[in-house]
Image (cartoon, rainbow, N blue to C red; front, side, top):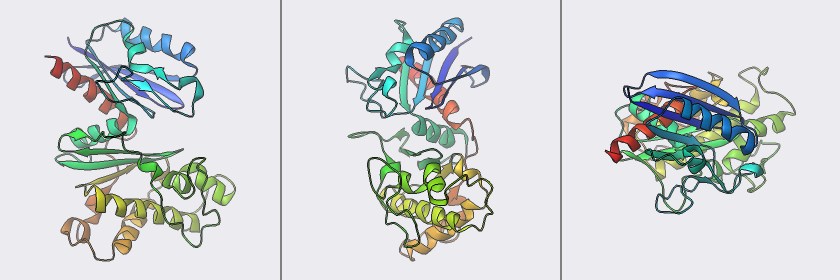
Length: 295
């Protein structure tokens, strides 16, 4: 039986799994993300014990994703200092010569949603996760987008809303970026506490919808995806998605004359079908592709 290892490497937890060649999950392990000297031996042992034939990884970043680079698969300038410049993919292989590939966690998620979820059948799609941070995976023409870097959608600059009491946001790198204005910590800073107990009509959610709509407009006008998928913990508030759709239409101002936007917005900006395992399933698919390409 073919065994494909999958790792969704997150800032707070690592989710490891083994799948068969048909995509059936055989085993799963979740462990906290601690220092590499603690976390890596447990992950190496898990994949060795299951004798995997290939490995796919979707990880927090930034990452070196150039296969020709000597540091391919390394975590680079992450704020998690103990993981900075860490050779994640090489370390996981631990000397084994098996097909392996790595991408960002959000690119893994968009692969899964395109192949098996809410964006199935689309030639282009964007997956956005809104949680403790904001990340975006971009898929075009059968591949995730890599270029100078991988897309850093969470740090696109936005116009602060005039009613925002904290218009600079909370990002330590940029004033007024998407993550600094719309991630969970930004909401908490705006209201001075935990937003989970607030009613849906609280003004902070109108601000949240406004910022996510600005992002959606920017993506529509630059990437022109066939679908936008909004996931992550913040988006688990069901009332937020319709607000984002409504505000996106308002901000577009009639400029985009596409039925997908004008008549079928509820099918254009959507929730993920595979949440909370989009990234894990995508990591499996990354490993499966690596195995197929090796032949």
